[in-house]
Image (cartoon, rainbow, N blue to C red; front, side, top):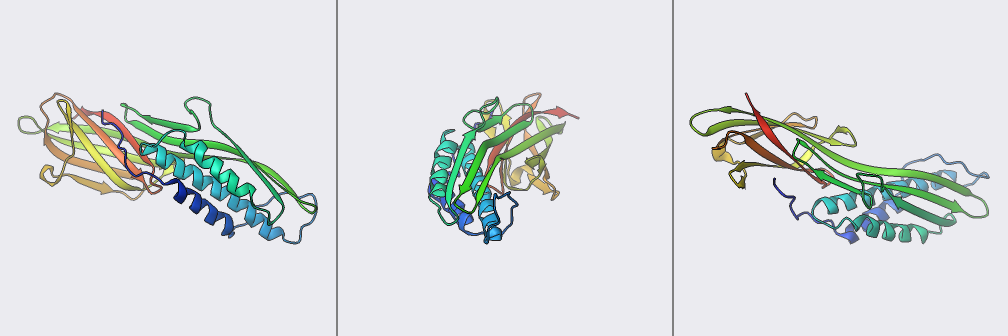
Length: 251
């Protein structure tokens, strides 16, 4: 089984900087209940929505880091920094943002990484937030959850050619929060004895992108074993890595 690569590290400072930009770039409206009529109602709604967008951005950066070989404690570290930034904001009153990380199995410290052998892989992070904003004129209090999940499903088949040569086809499906997603990088490996190799032009390697989160990878290789094991590593557009391994069926 191909182990995950220790690449594409997400820098904490960059994660927090992007989240802070979202905090001050108030471009959407989110409805909240307030105890009294507030003259800057629209600005306040925009401010609250950017808190949610910033929280989501931090969770995305954290799972991108963890899936690239970072520590599972990165989510807590990033959220602590984010909460500190939010709670310093006084434009609309006293801000209080708190969080808890998902601990229900299969999550641990808000992170779930499962890159299995049955054609399924997942990289996920989940956190729950409570935000309160209060002063003499306004009182806003709400809770929300952020779940970021990249799922990979692969299925392979092969046909015998000459000698040990085999024609292999691997169907790849990528999802973000259960919706079709696009990949920015697909790396395929196949096993020969105890080594994992990557196909190239000499193997007639080609990847067809159907534009809906589905890809077809095909190649020809000398594989002496009776079965063909493949491993697919994918990076989505959010820089989250996910991997799945499978044994191809003979056709």
